Length: 325
Image (cartoon, rainbow, N blue to C red; front, top):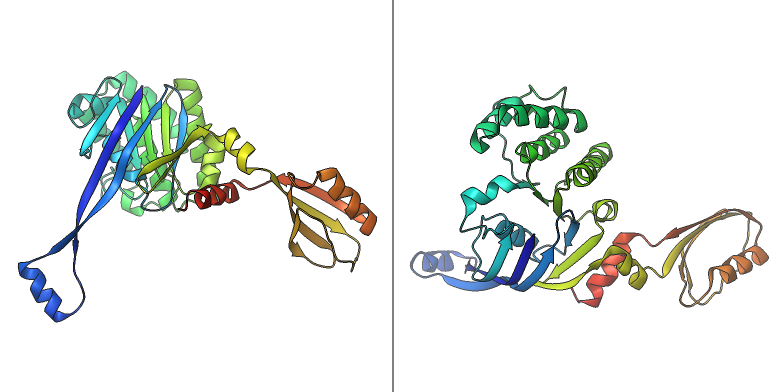
């Protein structure tokens, strides 16, 4: 469905030093630097996949999304999506995609949300029966009943983002590009958005490409992650494979009766300790969990124990460090 081969994109950025002299000099001559946003980016995505496209700030994630949505033209390379070249056949192509930029709006600021939806219906030439069915589904699943007649400028960020997602899906796209869709949302709104993305993926087979810094979004939605850094693809694989490689650490929380003995175990590091609770990071490649529990039970009276997998944020930090990002 999506095939990207050797995509390159550079930007010319003006440089100017501070001071009056340099400001006057810049009126006649400006120095520029070349920023290589993407360098030989290649990957493919199959229909129905949810792919997490991740990386640090400035890695090139948004630039890739803009190329795939037809907004930017690459310097070189090929991008074929549903047999279209996005920037060459944009009018025909955009009928098949939905795009949500967390910091950009496709809704008209001063009119009620429903009016923006009506304008989008006319722009995309959506048949009346399809528009009505999609609108009812989106209103129900994204809980828009109480805000559909409110001007966009009066909505909270969470409400507006739910409306943005609805607007991008009114025309029944086959592919949904989400660039930071949960930025600034509260916990309830994030859960609602995640559940909705899972629903349209399972029930309608919508392919989703998700860029975000919220690793909980990735863990909740994506089976596959593509890591980009310094303009290049550094990792492309299943999230479970990533867990297998970087998930050897476990977080152990122990509630216990008072104990003053020092804890000395190879492979176990104390993250937090009080007179009644201790949190350990355990490297299971160095020490077995049974050994940890045995030594703890010998040293103290245990009240409660919980063992959790290493948070995905920590795995990503390890991955970033490995690639010096």
